[in-house]
Image 1: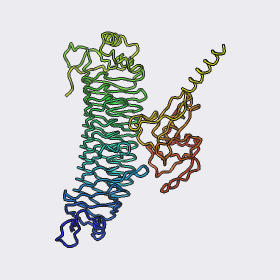
Image 2: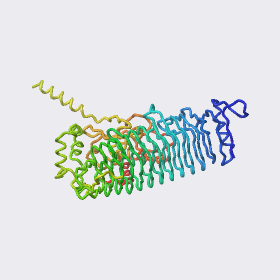
Image 3: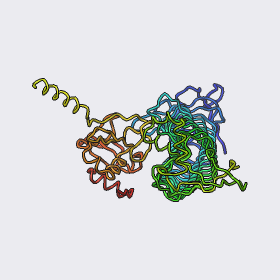
Image 4: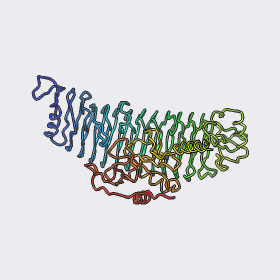
Length: 404
Length: 150
């Protein structure tokens, strides 16, 4: 079953010009008249929409040339139903408010929703999902302009939902690129999230979620994951999060989780971990970061194994003399030991915490002295006879070559 | 002697003027919450403690401030407590002049749905089942829900 909605062209009966404000009632009417399960194809042109409620199980297909214009007021489409699909159109200019979270597409109390191949431009929130189940958002471009900085909402925002998937989207210019709070069981893959004004990815209280193969670049505060257990983060890239209070990945109260095969490149702090327990940080690449791992001592039993630490100023820093975590088999480019038996494992242990990182922490200005001979001497002396740095924070089996 | 007295009074006045417990403006999207480390973005829910030494501790939400106050009584005891006015952008309310509410439908940054209004002001339309809380009740509520330890 399919229907055709034609906004432009004088010849066809029931047609409206693309700029006609009747476009709204027309689209609403078409949806009203459609049988459940119908696909409504939009002809090329601009339709104005405002708080357009869709409760029926329909597919709306813009054939890659229809534009839905919200006219800077209110929501665009409001989905409250099941088995609804939106695809192949552009939707732009939602309202933005201090009290209301206006979104181009609001999905509420819905089930089995698919949103794909859309372009969302200059909306307050892009896609806002609340109290819903089985929502899939894929292959969309979600772009907002930076002019509205202080009033920018999130690109994909999910709240109290279950079984959501976010795949292959491009998200930029929003507050948080992807935001999840109280979401259970989500799969987030292949998204390109860059230049958002707060976090690229931000989630709280969202257990059993997986984040695989995403790139988070140049977001003002990197990525923050908080108060969650059973998180899987694999094959992601965290790039260029430079500045005070910026972290490639901020782990706060994350338990029983896995951070594997990720690449951290050029961040002020690549991983900042606080009150996180039993997190496996394995086989990641840390390149050219200010501090590769800042591990606060209020977390227990984290395992840092077989990672490559290359060209970082500080490899590990911490705030305590005790070390409740386990470091083993990593490649450290600052390792100065030797391998006489040529088994690929350094014969002396490596201490990744530099004495100078303690000074820098207490007095940031002392960083000027980072490359001085004195700092080098102190670091070396401390490595031989640790007095101030954590005595048992060592990698007993440092790798001699980067791990493939 | 007289000159000396006048001078020292002036100096004292100057020094005392330096310690202000007025709220400091928060740089949105830049400043970090002193409790949860999240970057503060929602001015509507922002809060702060200003200690008797004049240092401001910014928070992204009332719940974080309550948890922080519980954990560090030495700072909170003599501090001035400010919350954002939920309905008026950019305004600060001193705790004594504010009512704190809890309403499940209000999405506060840390999820405990707390917000503040000027004392005796009506709750905005659209918010239902709100519950007014004293500061002590707020702290107990947060400590209980988050299992905050000292």
